[in-house]
Amino acid sequence: MAPAIPRLFLISNSTMHGGQYLQHCAAELGAFLGRGRRVAFVPYALADHGAYEAKAQPAFGALGCELVSVHRGDPLAAVGAADAVFVGGGNTFRLLDALQRTGLAAAIAARVQAGMPYVGSSAGTNVATLSIRTTNDMPIVQPMTFAALGLVPFQINPHYLDPDPNSKHMGETREQRLREFHEEHGTPVLGLREGCWLVVEGGRATLRGSTNARLFRRGMEPVECAPGADLSFLLAR
Image (cartoon, rainbow, N blue to C red):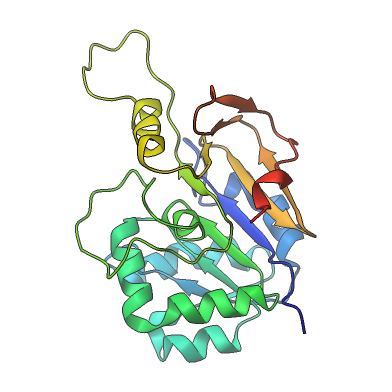
């Protein structure tokens, strides 16, 4: 039997300035998941798993879903019993390290390839891609490999930030760092500004939200992508 087409909801940021947790994407996330879902929550990107679970539960409860953190018991059993998975944000290196050590990386990838919906935010979006080489985070721990879940065949840079023309800061801009990535790798990178997210469903990838994304491809000038843009071509392997 051929694997199902993955269903993915990949969010740049979990909270908009002045808003509540996942409030900016709640309506579309609720439609994506459907009510009555048991959602396995992966809190490993932050150190305090219990506090993170308590923060996320009300947002999913408002969508009619039950959120249960995998740190409460056997994480593999929790994912196996769930209808969907939500991988939260925080430090991407810490998250990937935990996913690899617990066996969740392979388990989640297998279930998603079999049709289970995947929701990621920030670091959780980073690990849905080919690797974590385009994260903004510091390597506070060392995972076994930078290779991630590979649910999409391209890279994402969540929280993509445009240069401030009035800034006197002399460090690299985000665009310069992504161009450095393309000096070594040919994989496209989708820079998701805060306020937008990518929905992969039915074999199509669509940009959603209230802000543009910026697409970087090796040897080409970056391209602005507005909400509603069809980015399905990025799914070609």
